Length: 181
Image (cartoon, rainbow, N blue to C red; front, side, top):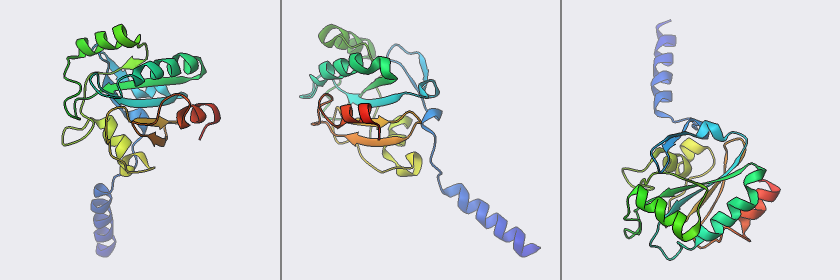
């Protein structure tokens, strides 16, 4: 009996150190205007998550992202932008300045979140999930630059990543939206 209890105790301690994949739908964030946003509200939608910056060579991708969103938003597709200042300080503005910039220059209507960190010790929980296989169950990755895009399916599974140089329109992103995994 004592041996059985010891095995159970050891197994319990071991399992507490092993992270099981977390559900995408358990995640939360704040919108750019400070409202709570529960990812559980996205069940049944394909989701493209992209880290953005206003002063980057890839900033014009906002235009294609908005076109992509307008084309597919009625087909259970959503884009979520996360402004981040992690790369060469290319997103220095406040949330209100970023929101104004996006609307004025690119007519952005897709969901924008508050400015976060997408790497390092202060990485936001959403990006921890996106980049750690132990949490997402699919793959490890790192955010290499602004406008890196993560694809999440209708069941909350991480499907793939498209790096900054991959354009939102005419790329694997549109193929994924139209054809699935």
